[in-house]
Length: 171
Image: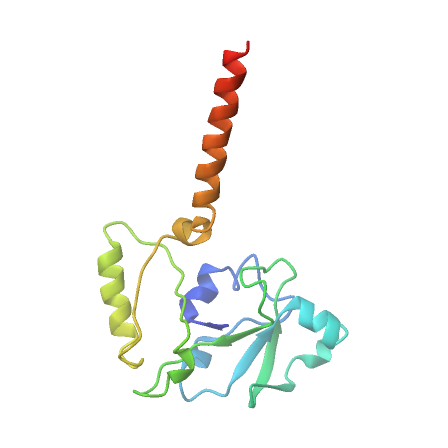
């Protein structure tokens, strides 16, 4: 996953979820001119690198790109459970972001007075270098997490209501 500098603060990488070994990303690592760096998951550190601190500062290759390892994520960091690499997200020039054609997820909390429409407008300005076919959308985390559960919850509610009514009628 590529993460912005704001996500580092939002997810607590400079606080309670500070890396187990090494450090979190520095502000300069979020610039296009910076050397590619990566923070690896605790799971990858344990299974592939035998929990060795010597991986810090070493170069690993992912998708053909060399990255210098700057940190090992805390064992308690599970925001991206299926991802073993965190890389700083940088913005540079138009046309360079076809790799994000699949998905770019943005996480945050709306401040007071900030509406989803205003947040969408702000994100559109930030993503001006993306392909024109890409769409910026803003949705509630609650909606995102529970989207697949809503039909199941409705069905279970109806079934529970039917069982309750049948039970009351037989009492």
